[in-house]
Amino acid sequence: MRKRILAGLLLGATFLPALQGCVPVVVAGATAGALATIDRRSLGTQTEDETIEWKASARVGEKLGDKIHVNYTSYNRKVLMSGEVYSADQKPEAERIVSLVPNVAAVYNELVVGPTSSFTERSNDSFITSKVKSRSVDSGKYNPVHVKVVTEAGVVFLMGLVTQAEADSAINVARTTGGVKKVVNLFEIIEPAKARELDVTHSNNNSKAPEEKVQ
Image (cartoon, rainbow, N blue to C red; front, side, top):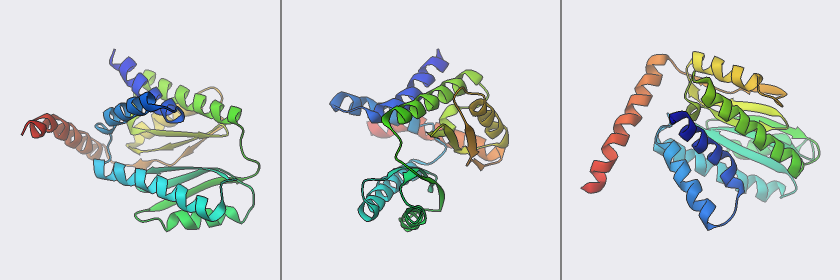
């Protein structure tokens, strides 16, 4: 039962951002809130990551226009840029712009010079991401909430604060998922003791939250 609930939250987080309308927005917010409480990043860092993503998108869009297709994924202040640009000089320029966004610690520039991907190709990437997340839950070897999965043109990028054992398991799940062409490891490796410390800290904070609201 717990696996089914977790899988539902993860898949909801994958597909809901693409939907429009008031109800999906509300549901997406609830889903994100549920997952945020067990994230190894602090709530402050999660908020910072979201701010970095929209600032990066706005600044690159302002400078390079809207004909390019770039996705920005910030995790623990490290930004993955994936997608397509139509000229070779745009790739380093986009990276330069993103690196100047406040609080960005590092930039992983995985942009490809070429034609913009189609709706069908992007839908297929979303499907691959959902399969990786679902299989992560089924594996039972790590908490999939701690692993950020991004798919671009069949290439799966993995981000997160994980132990080496968790990273190895997540990479194996992604590599053996149908449709995956390549796996790029962007994990930040932490010691098991640090992982337990972060998990306990968030657990304690969550248990105190209801009492703080009552006061």
